[in-house]
Length: 322
Ligand SMILES: [Zn+2]
View 1: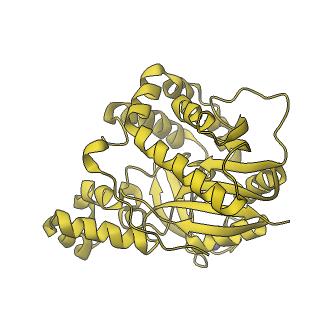
View 2: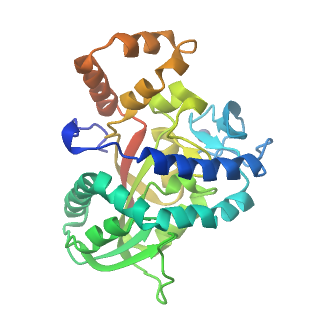
């Protein structure tokens, strides 16, 4: 399996911050209000969502939601209630904000370069593992940006395209079966029972079809070091934070072979840097390093995290086994 990664560095001048601060704050307020009033699960008896281990420890609490850590696969998961998650997915204020023209156009201005890189990643991997990267039946879970959907549809990859489980989904009369490719970018982390979801994905794919997904990892340095102070991790959007071991166990249970698991993240050190003061008492080494390192050392550190599979952003390609 391919796990290492050739270092990937964004040309900084081309990339504005990924999030618009004022829109992000509005989004966070809606989610925080929901989380703080929702029912949580203090006694988790269903086992680790990845490896089924029954033991767990409280790792941190954010917005009144406990995050548990598995002592077997080291994955982290939020103690949320499945019914509350269903209610969250129907939150009208959040959907209205995300469907708004300002939110959609601002996000596409910030992310078009990344999305084009993503399309190249699909093209290359489809060709490598399917032997073709055109005329593919594509089933997409969760994409919520109109511009990204337009780019996928115009990419030359697509024979047919169906979008499910998105605020932009239109209920299709015919459900895609025997898909060549399932896309699941930044989506699985929200699920409550990931094995059940992956079994649904498995059913929709043809034999040897490919599953592409991205997810934030519980083995990532900013997740482990910043805990509840991490501004980019919060309940109801980031409920599952696996490790490579946890992900492999989960995917094998669902009938997938993991072909690639890489961590091409570029943001870990920036996230640590933004929140450095919360590290002062918790992690003296990281605090010292981040306070004194120059740009070259910081870039070298991010490079090390990427290459070693320790960034908190992972991309994965898996193949449906017969
Ligand atoms: Zn586990």
